[in-house]
Image 1 (cartoon, rainbow, N blue to C red):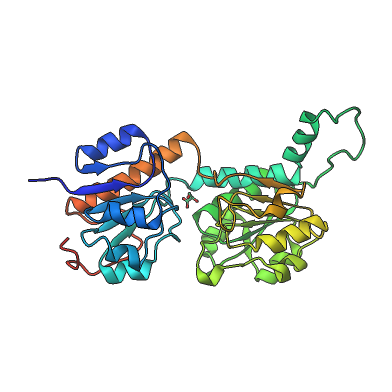
Image 2: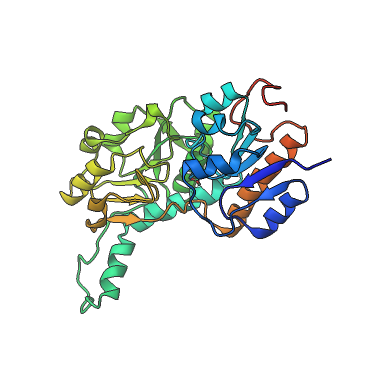
Length: 330
Ligand code: DGY
């Protein structure tokens, strides 16, 4: 019997592609080309499954051009590149990679918070440029992390990990805002207090965004929200581009209406709003919050396991939708 055909849409660990070849007829992308939607559709025309990343948009037009496609296994916890309703109506299973990246991403969120509050990249650029000629009392003086108030918007698993680090490791007072409140037990464990979004923005010294992207969360932080923040506050976005209005943020950073920002994700990435590149009080990283070797391997393996389980006739391991069975012959 012939093996199911799958597409691995971006370069991933070669040994994990080899593992997939034990189960499937695999077309991969070792050159890591970024295919246009048209090129992606052409490659998916005869495929049963795909291992995708956030850079492939899976929508109704693509699904219509891929009549055999039964599953897209995203190598990411976020799946805003999926039109989930279109996938469900077309009978296509979507999966993501929760849990395996939680602690690594929380580590990075905290690292970005610390680098931003303590002006680490700005001061390094100064030193590398040969500008450091003497010590001075206020040179790159930033803001404290220990004992300050940490405001977390989006209190899923990663948000909770950041709360634990702040409360237990740095003695921070933690406030959070989320669609729903955590259980009292989880609030106690994270030492976190639920507050309204406006109160959080007014009171937090450091605001961290970990909310999933959707039409409803688009520009969760825009000019009006930035205006509520303390002039000494920092804003950290490890969620998704589009959660923050980057143009509005560049203006408040330039005018020092907030102290600093740390951004790992951007509207329209990999493009970055040009004004963010010219303001000094922002730490910029290229969407690497989950990027450790063990975690990226775990993400790729979980995406592979979803393909193997689902196309092997078992249920998906980490589904993001529940399409009616049988629509695509699965
Ligand atoms: C995720 O897993 O969603 C990360 O942002 C990587 O895309």
